[in-house]
Length: 426
Image 1 (cartoon, rainbow, N blue to C red):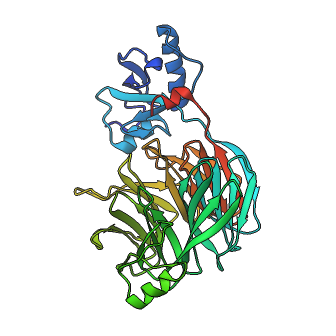
Image 2: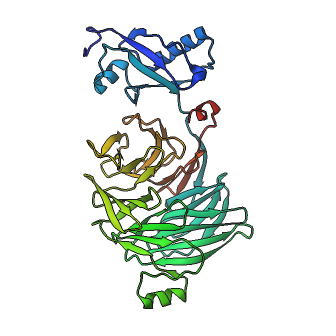
Image 3: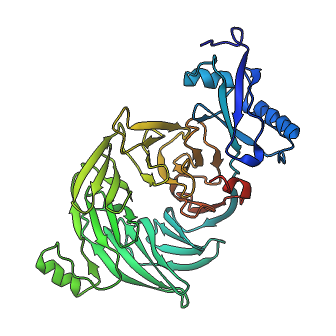
């Protein structure tokens, strides 16, 4: 393949798109080898005018050899090892709209956990308290109860009158709460005891009937999330009797296997849990049988993990300032499929989009939240600025809202632009 425009100064391309309102003729076009995405945008505009297709000067991104074009076409093809002797397929998609800053909420201490459900935002803080906010930034409730920093939170259920949620803390407990929304009062229903050191992570199964927790004691524990009184059957009789007489709940199962702290976990299907650890491994567990199904080795401590059922892939950040995409079911070639490089310090948290298989967010100690497309590993779609200290947690469970919390005591809320044309392609 020629490597300079002196050897080959033009190349044949063919435009394609899945967004039929922007379709242009698919005949080959001869373009300069050094053309970039801005010039390709201009070319598509001209073709749209000729074909009388719909166009309102929207911006397009271009996918060439399975990755978004972020350099000149010449550099992109050389890097991807694509021959210029054939016609190059150039797929174009409407550029993903930038999230807009909506609110910046200040709490009294570091915000280390956040979860969105409906119109409510639940946060956990280093001052041992939980807070409930509306997605419009109005404070509803402060909830004491833990005696050390809260590291993870999750919603269990929600209706018009009540909700339930769970929090996990460095005080070695996870608490299950009921919230009477009408009276705006909260009751701790169960205190989950069993960890011997700080809890760092929790995750819910798909129907919210079970949760898993992990932390510095290296143990993965599975619990019932029911708010009804239940008799556990895996602990000694003396412990069961004590638990039945109090709010204490014991684990249904304890799984050992990690050699370092469990820093993140996610349920990837009804019985499968993926954990990330400071011991440089990701482990995939069978929650029913209680064993390790698969182990993915890394070179650095992992800080978090998330799984996308749409992409059937895992994203995990680590202390080398990078995020890696894994195919946990890959049996051929490298399990690491893509490495994302842009953060300049530790990457603390990551969450997949729930509606687009290509999109995820990450938060780092460089004070940035980044919105990524898996087809652009070197350059994120957007840097979401606003934090002035480490980003410790993020959430994107509501497709319309990206939220993040950090060591600047700030809860950042970014609203995703409603764009009907883009959403039609999801």
